[in-house]
Length: 398
Image (cartoon, rainbow, N blue to C red; front, side, top):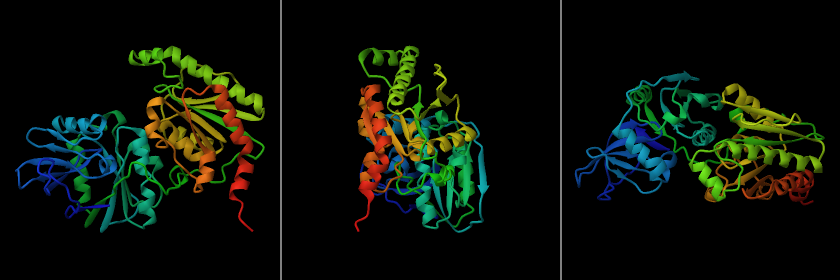
């Protein structure tokens, strides 16, 4: 945690002199929690990132006079949008809805979950478990679409009505409203909101019952559909088509690959139910495959899907934030890895297993070039061998 009120406790250093900066007013940019800073040595004034969220590993300073950006890591997707937002603040009003769960007036911890990517927002929210377990008064700032997922025992929920695509902007109106709410508290900290937290139970967030399982003689395999990153070999024609934003033939190929995958599994295990779920509705599936895809996620269909994931033996899908909730609920996961995503291994999976040996069985990562036949073989062996593997690996010594 970082103490921010009545004063800021963290040390920040001038990007030019590398000497400690003096702090001014706080600034709530949205994704970034910032403070005005001044260097007594070179006389420069900055808007400086606090080490929160992705700022723990990639923080930035923006000069107040020239808007020059300082900071090297993650400039393209994090630093440059931050710089642009300060140069061109949005005049739009932003609705901030304050939901007070219990009275608080003394020390609070604020967990900021605003982000322009769904997965980033959800992962930041999972930091709530640490603060709740520590019996801290927790205030959670969330995009309105994620409010349903806030766990019990938080003190307040501040929901912000900003879409993902607009969340990189700086809204002075929101900055003003957050500052006004903070005045109610004596001492304020901000959570570090780690980008990839651990030690949480996803069921505390989605409120799915732990007993929500299929009967032992029933099995279910689910493919997580998405239309912006496809299950397709990343060959030259595909890369060219992606640059030209040509998707239709490759969506058809993805559909056929999923059907082929399910048919291969069906040959090896006739008592399996098959589901396709996710975002998008392009292409149709045979009647024996349940199509639960949606055009837009909302609280109702996300809750419904989480219940279905919990009753699923194996979820399969291409690496990305689309795999977070499915992997956190299903018994086992097969994560299909595009060539350029191996450096992000496991960042889209919510591990719900404490034993490293069982983890290696339950969560598999395979190259995107892997054939449907091979993926089917892996899925069949995972389902067929799970019970025995669990007994062998976890049996206590007598």
